[in-house]
Image 1 (cartoon, rainbow, N blue to C red):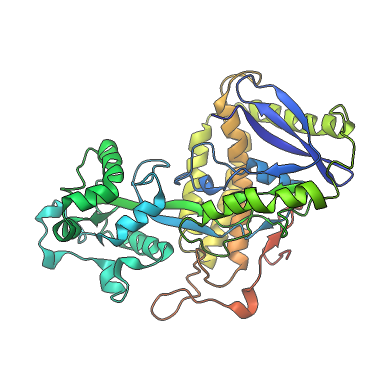
Image 2: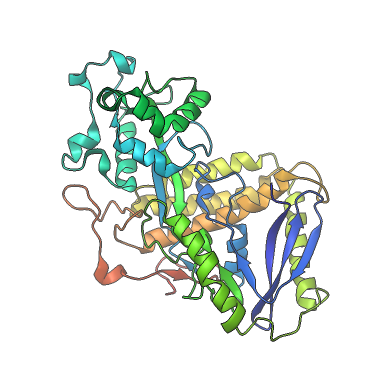
Length: 438
């Protein structure tokens, strides 16, 4: 568990010069000076509540940077992974989601008929619907993640999902086991199968796995230049915290590439040699008025959170946000749904700041307080994601607009009008839907 969380960027004379952090064990606020600030804080997939991300993954550091002038690029571009365990928060089928994708390609995916409650092994082959193979005969289960995810959700929305919730489809290895042998499948996916059985109590060698899509990776993030610097001089964003490498979709394992490239090769050169904010300037004492003001801003926000004293838990409010995002700004979006989501998020923001309940005290170990701050930022981020999705009137990668699809139901891009990064700039009031900064 990390001991500190960044809650504010300190900007002096237009340059990032440090941060305000909260000690997560003692609750104390701490000031840290730096000739430059590097954010390596990951993505924001937990805005959806259900994701493959770690529990602590959040947008707070990037969001504070955004509010200090760093542009936010392509916030609506999120990748959904098809092979996650339904009903379990932030638990992928696999330790590495790319392994699960490989597993999907060596299995057969399919739902049951509406109202069919038979066990999967009791359903004859002629009554099984391997819908990816039916819909994409040339590709079958080799379709991209976003296509497989949308197809799974569509099958469940039609009432053909499996399991008690109906929010799952089968991942069936029966034919692969027959063709390759139990030992081959065990060598390739033994770890995955053991994890699944431990969580669900079902043996995937004998019974098809039940899977459902969940948010996996966020291609959007802070806008950066080729040296990974944001629009705030001296403030850099690395890895999934920035938008830089993925465009509208992400290929398997490219996050590893981005982490290695950003950390080993890109950032050392500009941060050490070319940045105007580095060691040529003397250190600034953390008693500087800018540090004082930033710490006061953080303290006032924390006290405001604690003084709401409402009735709803942070978790309940987070789940409400996650459902709004999943239903209207998830795998498929449309104008009507995005408009509805925007209003619902703004209502939820008002509800959060008037009715959230945070137990405990400020100056102590208080994970509920920590999460409350993150959820407050997620709510504001959700609003920006919806605005971005609304403005981009095309389908592209992980962003699928239902108004922009071919006759076969595939994504229809509009490169003439939307072949750019939508980089959004923070204003004190919500941006109108027709406004973009690029």
